[in-house]
Length: 425
Ligand code: UTP
Image (cartoon, rainbow, N blue to C red; front, side):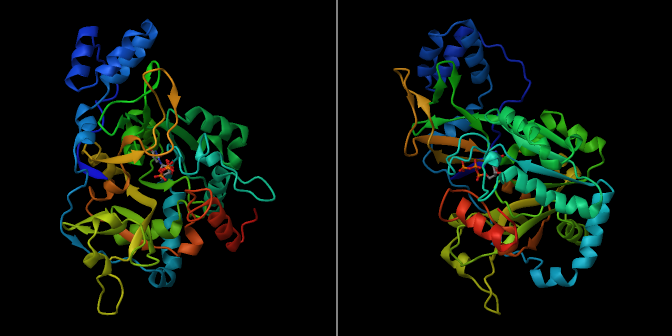
């Protein structure tokens, strides 16, 4: 579910010192008196911690939960044609050369979005630590680094890799990379940064607590990555190295090409300021966000936001007009991202299972969704930019997402696809 454009947080680093009275008034004003009851039972350190969390809440976001309609209003949708596989194949050499030149010139960096919680996979800890090996160990992070090494071996140089984590998994992620010697990638080319956190609420908009002195906070979605790069100072490294393009990718697609020179070259060649890898829909009803135009600008529209008429509309050759879905692998021009850095993005209100402590202090891990989390999504960045190259990939060669343990988009389906592509597991 989505809602209108609003900012998710108060500015990071803003020093706010709320007194007890003010704290009480703020909580009362927003119908959150139960948090003050919890606060009263804390020692000084606990009070300080909880106050600091409350000071950073953007109440305009929390109030969205109480509203009935969380859907985002869409503008006029039109199809956006893709650079299709046959055209890419015909120009592969040219694109690859152009892409490798940019990589060799140090202009391309990669950003691994690894701040998610992987709740569907049901494993505690970073998703990238998950072992998908069958006869030997093969961790998701390792598989991704090997994919990147395929490119850097060819280019003869390394690509800076920025890894986004969250408060929930940062230390464990770094420790794992250390333990595994960065899977053979040079440590100097890897930088970690933490994303922002957002509060969770129940269906009535009441803030959850996850321990006696802490609100229930969770990563604020994958859309705040560039803002987080900026506020954590990692963007300085991007600039210092002269990186002009960032390739953003999800942790869970173990087949994906990272800093793919053909994709980089084609995007440069197109003159677009961004690029998105897309797959042809398996069928019109496939549940995948479609890259199209909205009010003349590139946009990704979810399947549930489209009418049946739009979903099924075809061109004169019988091809679906809205036929290409995104796989969370994008290329962005850094200077354009800087221009939109302070632009507000839509906040998505998502129903989730949220562990919490109840009024008796008992820790509850719900079996079904019990409230909302607030997330920014990277796909919304595309609409803030003037144009985007839609770059088709072959699903079976580049798209093996791991969302679940079994079934669709699972460890099992990804293992089968990896084997099909000659990867030993
Ligand atoms: P998903 O939307 O699949 O979320 O993330 P998830 O947290 O990994 O899994 P579920 O929904 O809890 O089962 C897509 C990509 O965005 C990253 C994830 O790590 C993954 O690479 N992500 C997601 C973040 O980096 N931060 C977030 O807050 C959410």
